[in-house]
Image (cartoon, rainbow, N blue to C red):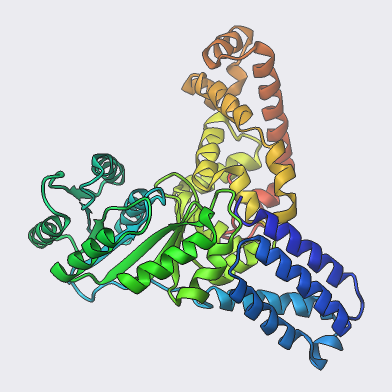
Length: 450
């Protein structure tokens, strides 16, 4: 998971600070030296780290902090604020043209950064906001890119404009604009060609597209796992083509986090979105304050709640009905399937736990305990039941259980154990009505789907 190593190291530093009743200037300098080393190991730009540590030190070594009631917490608060400032302080929104005017967005980046997938993710996000996007296949050098865009566009139910590989990207962009005007597309997203490395030909092509059509936003997709290379790529693209914002892809991978902490400070361009997975829905708006909280191991409950709001597609009546059944211990296997679906939409169990405060240093242990194959087996067992059996588990006699075991490809003992655990869960739910919408539960209270 992104930032895991950096988070663990910073939490160790903060633990030492909290353990001290009073802080001396020497204590702060020792702590900041460790912070500096942790940031450098995370591949954060050296100049950025130097300025960051200097800013924190100037604020931390003061009478108000040193003589405060909780100096360790004050220093952590300053680190949080400075890290947020480093990444841009305020969330930057992608700007659309006013009224019915069409907004043209040009996507660019190197091969392998996930540009084409990110382009489709972005279109899906705009569609949810009520826009009518048009995806334009301008990568004529890699036929697979056109096919990939068409497949992803179909999944997002977004129209894709393509003229194959026999026309120039400039001509394709011009024709796409005419198509958008005739068909009422108010957002046109140009998926341009990538390269294995930056070259003059690619830059000239991007410049020609910008000269041929009015591009309102030029977005660069960079691979977060490349660390400082991502920052260098962003700087060069901005100097030669001009970019308005950055999208960091593969932030869910084993990345050290340096790109997220360096890009804004080095290029002056904001990070607009981050890709947090391979699914087309795995694109999150970038919030500097929330990202700082994640890095420092303070969790990101706001994003977790927003994910829940977006993905828990249960209407109010159905949710009330489910809560009532859970109160009575009548949570059935149909409800279980719905909960599993919602949990996957929110990034899986490990994705949910990673956003909880204080979980950063424990995520390695937790992920090793979460057996995704076991969860898949449990789901296969439920899917092997008939609808009647799911709604009424009392029907599950030995012969039915043997049939279910064969259908799920597991031993009968696995089915028996799962059903027994499920029955125990029902009893536990009955004992905790306040957690499940009973008396004392707050209206609209957030409920994890498991």
